[in-house]
Amino acid sequence: MLRNYYLLIKPGIIRGNIITALAGFFFAARGNVNIFLLAEMVLGLSLIIASGCVFNNYIDRRIDRKMVRTKKRALASKIIPVKNALIFGTVVGILGVIVLLYINVATARTASIGFFFYVVVYSIWKRRSEYGTLVGSISGAVPPVVGYVAVVNSFDVGALLLFAVLVAWQMPHFYSIAVYRMNDYKDAGIPVLPIVRGIRNAKIQILFYICSFIVATSLFTFLGFAGYTYLAIVFLVSLVWLYIGLKGFNVKDEIAWAKKMFGFSLLNLLAFCIMLSLDSFFNI
Image (cartoon, rainbow, N blue to C red; front, side):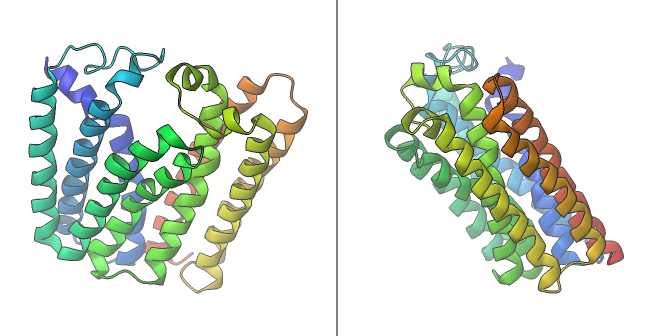
């Protein structure tokens, strides 16, 4: 039973978002890390993300039953009663807000905005438009900003750059998923871009956002926030991602290509987070 509640909070999503939040925190701290503040940020944000995932499971429970990869989720398969899930999600979310309020109001407000866009705005848009992915990228770009704001207690150029990088990264990441999970999305009636406008259009969009990612990550150096070692490594890894994206126009197996794009997108984000964090400590 406990395992079902654990899966309900989507721990993989929490881990991924905490990695970007840590990068934002270390970037803002510039080597002066307050361990207690860091622990509070991680705990509070994890609880709010967990709450958002519970409510997302609740909202998507009917369409989850139509998709192969989601039909066994606890609410879709009715393993957990809806009432219990809603109480669980509410309590977890409130606890998360309380923890972040203890840090500062700006941090709690930023995380709450991400929660709202994920649970409310994204849930509506993804059923109505292929631009739902773009709306969803807003919530996905919030965690590093939360980490940053927890340290500086304000939203400034550094926070804006973190937000821009994560928005640009998420689009090719999720369009790749949409390509290799296209049949699932068709069955669920979700109008993702590859279905509405075709896979070729999705590939063009992927290249556009990868180029946007390269520009956004480079600005950290050109605006004096990071060094040239950071720039060289992140730029080179991003060029490989771009190369894989370009090869997509000549592949025969588009599903295999999309899975490769998805996998490399994770590596690319990890490289960015690691290099930005290292630069904050060693000014490389």
